[in-house]
Image (cartoon, rainbow, N blue to C red):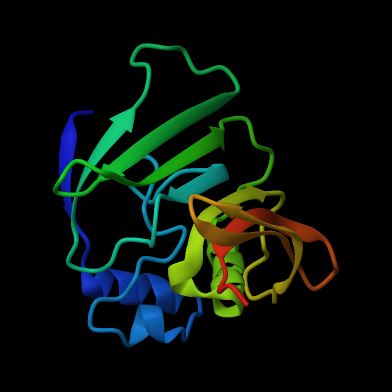
Length: 195
């Protein structure tokens, strides 16, 4: 894959946030909404059996109207045995790296998983700690969320530190179905205001 020009669309961000059941004003009401953590795909398309994802932002997440260049890394011609991986890096107009999205898809997964549960867990996390303060959001889907089922989200801060001049926290998150089974796990990093 060569370089692909990407213009972040306001309506696409708002629809994505709506599908992830977010009412966060940073996504739904801002003139230039910020992208949700799982919005930028690792493979240029939001399709496939994404079991693991890792989204990193090298500063505040991009916003609607930003013009990015997406460059997909990979090894063409490499045989896929049990899993396929993809990595896309997103650069701004000056060539600065603003985000990267990685995904691993298990080709022999017994049950289909949905990216919806990861997006719902991201909504919970950004509603809690701030949409513009996300720096990393890594997920692992464990099992499918049955249609119509309710997912319960929980999270806890596991450490606080300073990196790149920002005060940050790392959190662990989990989404469970109505029976209490874990559907998706996530590990995230957010910036936090200094007290």
